[in-house]
Amino acid sequence: AGRPLAVGQLEEPPLVGGRPLTWLAAMLAADKDRLIFDIRQKALALRKQELEMLVSRYNNLAGLCSIAAGFSFDALIEIDFEEADELSSTLAVVKPAFYLSATLALALALYVVAVASFTVVNGHQLALLGSGSGSLDRAVAVMLKQHRPLFRLSALTMVAVVAAAISIAWLKMETIWALVATAVFVGCFVAIAATLSRLDRVMNLGHMIHGDAHVDVHNERGDQIDLARLDANDGHVIQRQSTFSPFQSTFLPSSRQPFEASCAPSGHSGSSEYRPPALPGGRPVRAANWNAQLHAWQAVGPHEELPPSRP
Image (cartoon, rainbow, N blue to C red; front, side, top):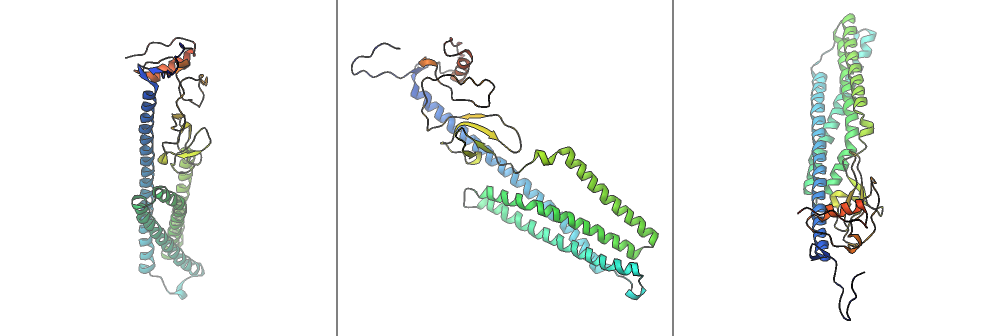
């Protein structure tokens, strides 16, 4: 309790470093705006990096499938076979298998090249030139949704190319050499599948990657906030729940809540929540290092003396 006030005399606001508390509130508001700006910039930079990664994936798929399409088309045109009456019953079955495999490989490769090229061109254009505020998010979401089917179709293209190569071996080689070529192709395919499965298991991709690099957080009211669209009115206790790496909690002061002159310490030592710091019992705190002073007060309690602040 302070000294009694005279009639008509207004109570002076608490002082921080010889200045009124409103100066501290203005400083906090400026720090909050700068923090929100930095967070939005970093979140947008993360989304742009993800867009570039997806564009690189699509370009790689289009390049590989264009090569497979060229091989398949060249095989359909250039390879000549003997007449049907000179072929044995086994070769008569293998010849349609070759045409079917080569045609399937060509069709799948053309599909992947067309879809990948369209997605890269228009997705990049939507992300950079879109009129809406969520154009970048929409482009990334569409490209993420489409890239898995394209990977599967490109894998089927490779399988069709291998099947066509085995068919050519049986049509062009003697039986013994055709068996050797078939064993080599099958062994190579099995080795590729086993190596990819082992790498997927070692990298633990199914457990480490659950989606895109979109960073969503939740404040103490339970509202979901996108860091790329963080507003000055969003804040309080934010618990980051990212899908690509663990984060600790972050405190963002809210402009909707006034800065109270005194409050009890939160007492959450080691907790994931961090409550807004407050002045202890209305006592003035030096403004030179106010954040360290408030942390020190929370550590020793509201009735202890604060350590001197550093200049």
